[in-house]
Length: 300
Image (cartoon, rainbow, N blue to C red; front, side, top):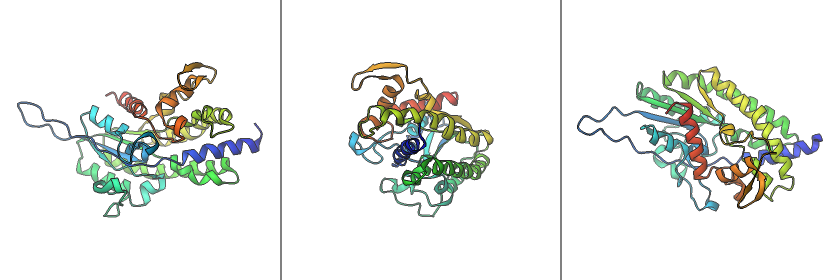
């Protein structure tokens, strides 16, 4: 592909990737056992962006904070109480260096009243519940690419952005790992929503964009995340792979809405709002798939 065209496609990819914003919902505390004392409360601490908060776009009949996200599902199915510290539109730098959201007023996007970052709040929660932390999950990095959308050279900009993500994770994850003790820490990536450009008419070169996105996710973004999580002994869950993003585009299926399309395209259309609404966030089925991947990775 010529360099100019490749940069233009990457720019389109990054425009959509900037859209990770939303608000969270909570999970119920575990029920007590019958005939005895209630078990010691165990918690799931969740950090990150809108994928963690559980966002459903208004175009899909939702509202901020209205959806049950993967973190809620994981906590519920693991008998953990969710402490969701994720924040709309958070970047990897903001996660560790800027005030996060107020857990008591998250629906309005209010900042943390104590000025704590997500990392500060997580360390505090992990130390408070030391010995009772069942799981820590982190999903971050998508919003770091936002400034590259209008860059003259989107690929060069993306390279710098991924380097920044790695630097911020390298500063964040050891602190989180120490505070978590022996509790499992799991880092996630995202579905390759841009496979949906294959059928989304807003993208005139949608099939080329979908093809390009496969290598960008597999060889560029996800490898960087995986390296940083594994460096601190955290588990990395490749959600792109778990949602079929690496399947050959020559494998086709008959989709009831879009006709004969690559199987990976049909799947991302079912798991995200991108094909229909141009929104990168998961459908309820998408959050289910992400939760299943996390639960499988942690042996739950």
